[in-house]
Image (cartoon, rainbow, N blue to C red; front, side, top):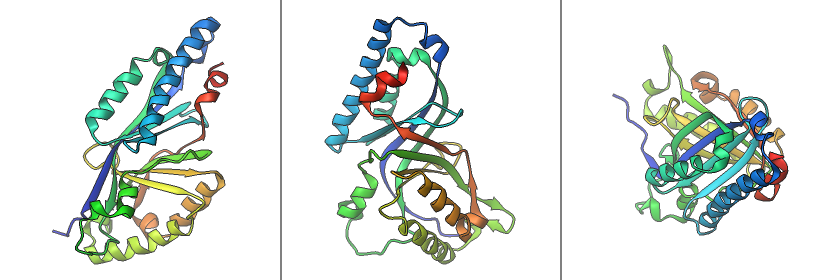
Length: 248
């Protein structure tokens, strides 16, 4: 049996995606619509308060294309808190006009492929803590996609020994590092929690950087031989002060 990679695990992660029932929403009187939007603003403002205290984080974006209209990403220390938040969101009046289109459950993680054993508790390392308990940026654009490592014939990631996987991941990570300052990347592990094995969430102020980064990575062996990808969801930041205009 090959050596399994060990992970450091941080906040629990929940991506929720919705389509808006625009025909039904258009039937509302202006006062009713204002009430719905005000309640949603209150929910998001509470998420911002938690974000500012570094007790969790979130993002809210308008998805481009017909796979969804909205994506809400929430991070919390426990899955119980995410369950409570999802229930709270479902009880908002606006949820009567939101049609669930996709969801993804995972945990922010760091693997030991590139880690150096310093003998210290990694959870006390400030750099590691910022990766495991991140402050999600308010960048203009988001890109989210799930992915697997392939397990087919000779292209079976899990049949490679640890040293080979370390070598491949070292090369793969160098591509991501070359986009530092252009793209923020968050990896969440979902083996045993959802259909795919990992979720990747990217943020940037230039959507073109998503295309450039992912295209370049496709030529790296980790992706070319061992990567299988789900749907890609991209969108534009939706700040609370734009909600009224969005839903009108």
